Image (tube, rainbow, N blue to C red; front, top):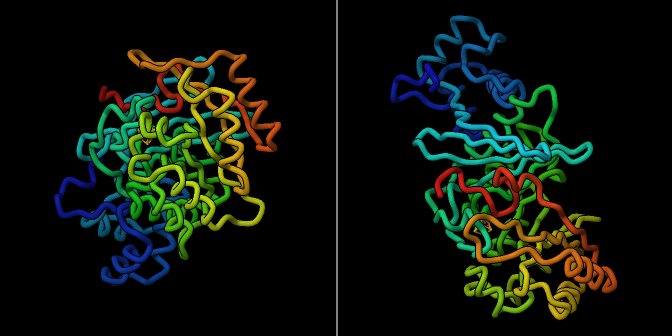
Length: 348
Ligand code: SF4
């Protein structure tokens, strides 16, 4: 644990928004340029304590350390898959834990981050859904996954961020939006390299496209072509059925040349028929999009199975024939439970 925070009343500088940090600097009687310096050292140099900010005099560091500290996630465990995928288990200040997954793909290093501890959405093919929701992550806890993994892999750099770890990002809307602001403005990650994935909280999708929110890429976890099947595997569909979800997608203000990604986890005998593929083509007509087909990653005790390669290829070909861009994705890290829908932070 951080030595600098032994006094209860100390403020973790990472919990503050840029405006709040400006206020703290002003209230401490410091000139305004100190805010810029603090942001630079915390978010770009990724220092872990006020004492490391060597641009400040020893006196200023000592002064700041009396009332503030820089909080850090605690690495509990790191696992590496045979395919090179790395999974990080991080401890939070209240002894909860969260997971992030680093996936290497050619020149890309994509970090899959969590937005909640557990998840309330209960998608039946997902191990995280079996944990239930323990709590939302705060904006700084979301951003800190990027900072912490970034430090560990130096001099390599994370190139892309996906919100596809534990949790439903749109169910933690305000903190996730604040984390997007910090990632783009403070960590200087391009919004085009950030993707937020939702299971389909339809009313929040247009909100995500609202003014003042970094216009990141949108991915929607679709996984069915009828309400009947989607109701049975994704309870969120009972509240926000397919028609309202697709309508929300049609109204999402996409930037020029951007597309929505629809994720489709293929479950044998459940959503993998030719009719499903035909319906998918019809449903997505008119939406600038691509489809990621993800063969189900079985885990111990799961009731679903992965379709055969022949079924996967046929499903993909029907989409391609319907002029839908469809990519067959190979999930990374299944041997360390790091693949899609397998994160559980050691809770279950
Ligand atoms: S798939 Fe996503 S939204 Fe569904 S239970 Fe898992 S983490 Fe939650």
